[in-house]
Amino acid sequence: MIEQFNLHEIEAVLKGFKPVDLHPGETIAQYLHRGIQRLATERDKLRRDRDGLLESGAHLL
Image (cartoon, rainbow, N blue to C red; front, side, top):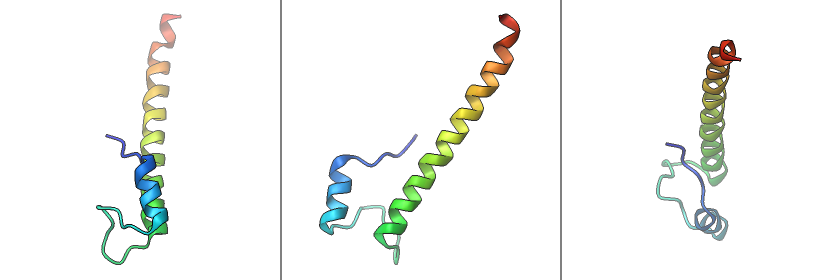
């Protein structure tokens, strides 16, 4: 499942409230970077899966 930041989470971070899954000693910038990296990795995985499906279905055209 892809974790996404909702408006309330981002607003809380900007107002100075710590997110629930903030690692000990981790800064808010590191927390946001970790989330963005997780989303980018999931996006890349989905693109590879999509490309594989397109290649395997190309013979049907």
